[in-house]
Image (cartoon, rainbow, N blue to C red; front, side, top):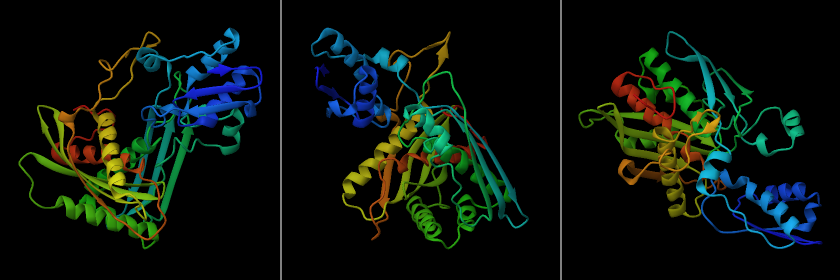
Length: 366
């Protein structure tokens, strides 16, 4: 950070240069046009580098010192004083008739702020609901005649913000777990149950193709190794449809994912290798959240100071991943975040099929 009388230059590892510019301008009390932000190429962002508190601190110090200043947070500072993905609470309600058809489906989700944390205060009054929090929360099965999603903004005592996919993983986990519950109550195969609730809209047809293709990849309904079960989930995000099937076993209350099968329909694919890599990265991050990642607070402080208290998925727990891209002639859509949505629900549905136990919290524990 170099604060001069007529110009401020900021070097920051950020994925949101304009947000950093606004923060620095506010800290110094100057116009944003006087500030140049140079993003440095360092590490992944995944939402967490949308805000860089160190830039604000460096600006204040550089102005006071009259010379360039470098500020960097260490791991403990970052883990205890940064922002966190918000906790969420979901309520699903459905009405199924005697033919196994859903007549009404409702999803209520309460979440802390995701994007509103970094927007001006007036934005929440204008927009109403935090679209980062309800991303993936809409009910997209167009064969269901009555559908409602309600999003509640819930204040939390810790600072919260975006994580890869924003609310997508948690919202898909709730919806797709409940779809399996309804299928079980109706006595219908989970794949067929989903297909039964798709209409003939463009999105309904894309859902149908993704589900049928991933089912064929995983040999849905075929024989499995002893002690294994399959779980299915699907979502649409950034106009991209993703369906996943997880092949899961349970041994001594330990859940193990052996294979993940995935179909993704992102429109026209410009770089197939890159798109597949994004799917694989999303699955790994999603599984890490499904099994391990959790922030705990004790006596008003975050307990984790490093990765010894915040474990991540390792190579040992990483399953084989089988990805098929469903290319089309439509314009390219998103590939970086949509594949993270279904994985937790797919695993939970496989555990439910295997053990009869419905896991409703993340990270999962039997």
